[in-house]
Image (cartoon, helix red, strand yellow):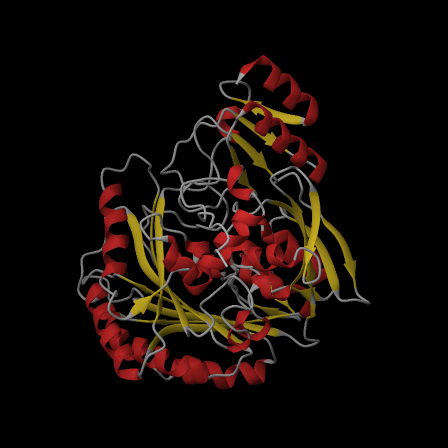
Length: 497
């Protein structure tokens, strides 16, 4: 790597952390503590120009590059041993909110909780994720599912343009009219494949003038089969204003007070409208508990990100947040939150139920019920299945309108395992639990969601019929020469005429 590389990089970037020096050990951490990776240097860039200089210097000296905006890549591929990590977390501003055009310019390293707070104060929202410490940088490029997706689409569906630094270090504006192939590819083609995106311009949506409801309903283990089958059958029939998620977990026999299945969601509308839909979901079983949290327009964004005020419009209520929904009844030895950015060892994997006749869903649900019913709870981890509702505005686009391919699916299934100690002797068992549970659904599912990346799954499963076009874009943009990692999209040369 050499002295000259260091001198040039330190001159080009205001803040660098070199291996073994200063705060390096803290700064190198990523959100999955299963991976203890040691890059040669971390460059905290504050502009597209600094990113460009990093790419040019790394290319000159033959140093591999990784890109991270928040460090949430579940398989640790935003870092690696001996590489230059281009870190975008210092680029963390909303640069502009244009109410006349209904557009916002947001830098790639801005935390989602801050995005929601600042847009919400102005009365607007973008449909982004439900985890407060995630940044737009990687979220958008994987597609981006969140609490308003059935109403407003995926995060990438609301993208107008982006600033991208390419493999030569050139700074480009990409949109539907400029560098169209690149713009198509970054909307679902996965982060780190085509360049470094430093900022995005989004369409913003005016929040309703009335309160917005967030609800949660908890059911016990005796209701598992009835509620799960009912939820899967009912959700696609409900209005697009409602986006839901469902959690299925293992509960020990001696804990009848514990919830095995929880349904939560957010309604883009009034309390009266929400009550009708929530009542249909409550009627699926006999709830252990339920609540609807009413939120004023400027605070609607908070519920998706773990920041609920103590009272709204004079109503006092308990502070219940989505990340609390996941674990308030879970294993006390496992992480109490997976959304705050603290590094915890974990494994996730995902798939989509095939858009098949209902009897196929019934068979699939039989497998899922068997996976959770009367099983022994893990000693030090939270093991569960998250079911994210799709359809609505997501399905309004065709599978090749953007790089996100799976527009015709009704749900994302995401198996998850989270534990606290990276040296936990049961860690491998937890990883295997996730992998095996997904494999058991192979006859009823296909595809996978790149935002919930799993290195065990081939790339064709993430990109479906769009993989060839993505490979051509990689080849044509020369990005494969610079942006290369364990699961990067392989370049495909032009076909002979």
